[in-house]
View 1 (cartoon, rainbow, N blue to C red):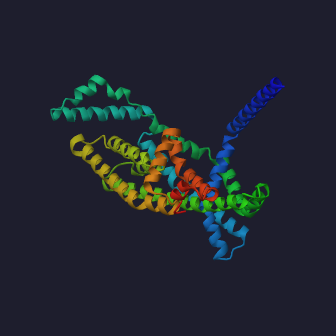
View 2: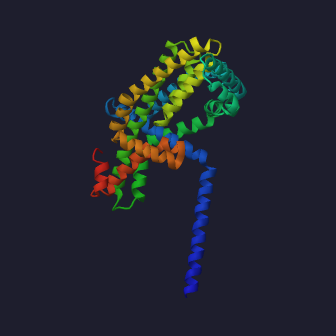
View 3: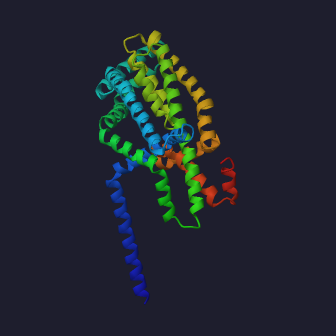
Length: 362
């Protein structure tokens, strides 16, 4: 009897393991579809307030409100593509961001100028650079990789864009139908809590993603202004890349400042290092730090405090832990995922003291 129970247990465990492996393999094979669904869900969260405004204030029928929203969204995407993509491509080519060898050659030339500057000021760091052969160890593949990834995504986004827009349309149009369908499969004793969690999460994440777009746009404009003030060439692409890095909390702005300094130096290689390249780079860094002060004290508190109702220290710790566990991807999704967990915890464990402490503002 015991041997049969053990054998059945082993068979059951093997079957479960095979089933999990099959599900993971299936998810891996359809990862593009999953990405489309996630992007569509984010767009749905962003555009839902606009649809609600059209329905409640302007008395649009649901289908017309959704169709008009999608029309505005498509026009916005077309406008961004027509405005940004040609400019990004042309400036990236001018900056040689698509050519790793050109970047490395420019970096070596920049290091040589820096070494001469140090020698002229009786600083022996130049010898150290020579001995360690630092320039040969630098790897600038991440710069063209970032840009090529962006351009590659844009260029191959044709079918994906159609799929995302199609899915988003029905997410918005049949939101009530999807909600009713979910109600049917939910256990009756937890239905109200689950639906309340979904509603609160939807509202909070809608505000978060809209706020994030506004934050990135503000940072991009401020970066661009700083670069234009100091006459940095290829200002648009540098500002675009550095603003894009702000998606990664805390670490992104730091990487963006370093990247801005490097690209500013490379863009001004024709000038004198002491009187042109170095002062311009320092001014740009100071400008970027001022932008970060504005962002950290105005934009981020509004987004984090009012959209996800979390203390800045709380956000910092969650982002840091997610970064250690899951890398850059973890840092990006940490805040939305943590917000969702908080909402669920408050609905299902409202009497827990820890849950009460971290969800008191929700």
